[in-house]
Image 1 (cartoon, rainbow, N blue to C red):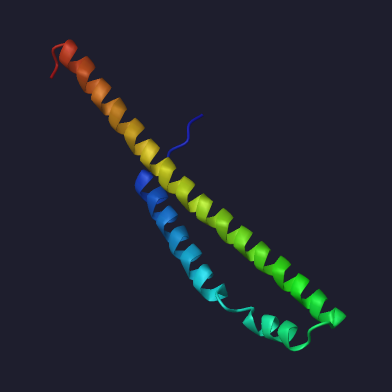
Image 2: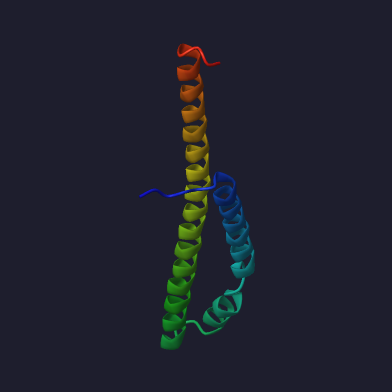
Length: 104
């Protein structure tokens, strides 16, 4: 049982995932400022504390998900590079064997 991997397609998927990660970062930047403003406008209110806690938890979750997506993109790019290197090494070794056998 083997797995066929096209390094160029894996590399393309990694790059696309990087683009999506950066787009997500841009989209969420500043999205929770209205929540921060509401918290600041009502100091001392229990609902302000709860709202700020929710905002912080939501922001942390978004940051975590984007971080995981970024890691997945990097892993795809690394895998594509590793497969390309392994493939090239196999070709080089095969050629070396052919030279030794006199079939260069």
